[in-house]
Length: 115
Length: 115
Image (cartoon, rainbow over all chains, first blue to last red; front, side, top):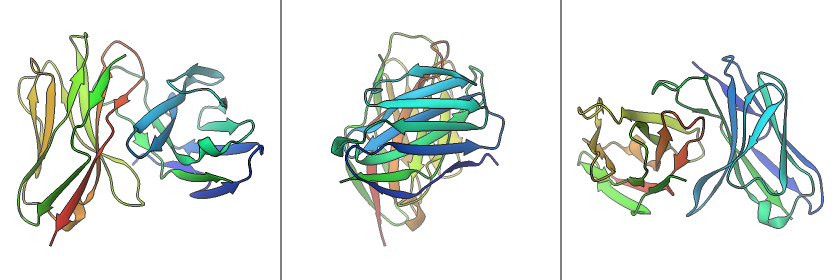
């Protein structure tokens, strides 16, 4: 089974702090994703990466950056946390390919509260 | 960008009964995939069922089945013999076959199962 883990389940940070959210997958997947999940808005893509050191902006990249130095690890960085970044953050990974079997596998999520 | 609409923010069903969750999407692509994901309370999001748009036959996974109407761009999920463990948030998702990596998610339907 694919395993996607996230470094924290719950995180409390102060406005202005730099925040790192880590995601690790153990299935050698090429593609990795960061979403934020908010009630009534569903999942919105922040960034994704299709290879080491490669990244592409999703729908809501403002205020975030990412890092992918190793294939199995994808980090989301909040350079200066703000209260409107309080949310649930979900990491996902999937194998490269266009077939229907190449679905996404999700981590357990990190619930971030910015005070 | 493609849009996915789930018009039912909340649904409830009596245990052992059948419930249908609706999903519509908008796309100009001819080949794509559709998914239903389940997110139980405080637990990881998992794939429930998937459908390839070029397949006429509706996908089925045990008690879960879909009603895929390509012309109407509709992709509903039917849960038969509902169980308490089916209580969760359900997300409908779309991915174009050739448009790369991005999944598009609906806003979710929260399903309550009444004992």
